[in-house]
Image (cartoon, rainbow, N blue to C red; front, top):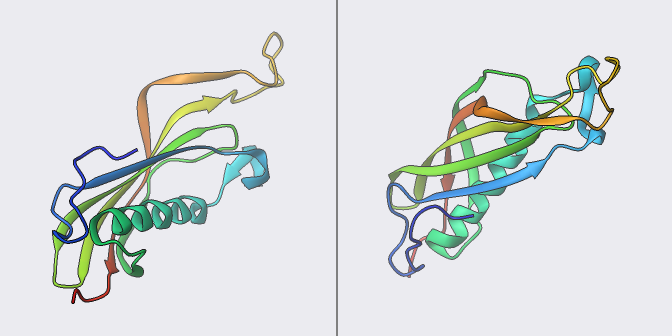
Length: 144
């Protein structure tokens, strides 16, 4: 899902261009007690939205160069539906600085063993829970 108009590859990236993906977190990603998912899961999603953003803005997948900041703010659990967003915050000749956000939109049952709660119970959160934020840099090829 692209939230802002997409420039053609000939015009390049612009500040404010945003790409968003949603994904169900299946139980195969849970590695810790309580169905917790490791932080690398969200970073992988950031790579996916960065790739689409580079394709839309520059006609190339680009390369992820670095993170300058990563903050793990809330847990991601198996059964959640998450939304990963990348937004261009600065544009260089070949570099793009991106702000990333991973938010939890729905959450599976916290304790499916509670009497009267189905193992498949889940709820839409009243407001998204920001789980991870980051700032990263991608690079794209020079334009001819």
